[in-house]
Length: 151
Image 1 (cartoon, rainbow, N blue to C red):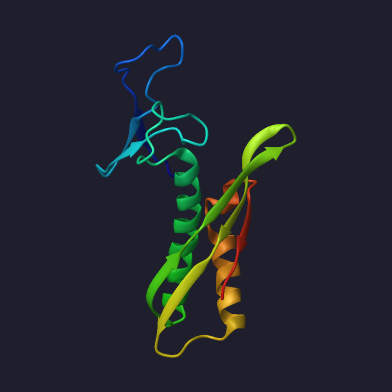
Image 2 (image 1 turned 45 degrees about the horizontal axis):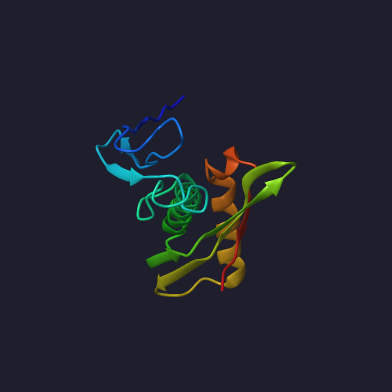
């Protein structure tokens, strides 16, 4: 068993907490020392009570799913001796009401991979993405539908 940790910290600043006029800005600190400025999304909590430039949980969720998939795809390619120069994913998540509850119901991964050397066939790329999806710890942990769209 492996465990992971993150410290999520918020401190009341100015504003009235009781009537909801307080900042949702907070921080995430990870075990390696990185600290990320976080907030509720301005889609959910109006400005100025959310912090638009900070990462919100929904964005982080989508980025984490994309990152997990990418890391497994790169690993699979390296094991197959397929060179990759870059991998960029413009992932998009959709939040909607499902069974009366708001959720990120779908995430579309849109990876663009630049290969060094011979470009693998579309069939091999699709198989590698399928395998990366099967291996991704996070994809295995959620009920969000994850679609992978490759050019």
